[in-house]
Length: 128
Figure 1 (cartoon, rainbow, N blue to C red):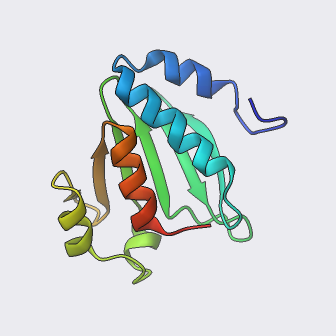
Figure 2: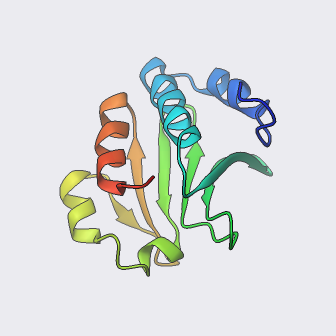
């Protein structure tokens, strides 16, 4: 556990909640990658029954990216600030992930199941 990480106690709780071994490993891999970011702050946040891992800009508190933890998969979201940033293309995302879809709010989401999914997503995000 990282010292003084906001809601860090939720990380092992959520890892234990995930039933799929490959999804659990993908979750821990993604959290580890997030811990090394320079331009984003990240933390776990419970929203009712939703297990949300947030990526936000520290100077503005804008949350362009998020991850929802489920028992069998991770659902990664490109929130509106990311969609509207022109940094990403839905067509390119769809080419990388056949699970890519858009919700009613115009946000994009991708279902992740493995470390390979996380590596492909991380390369696509190209964030520091």
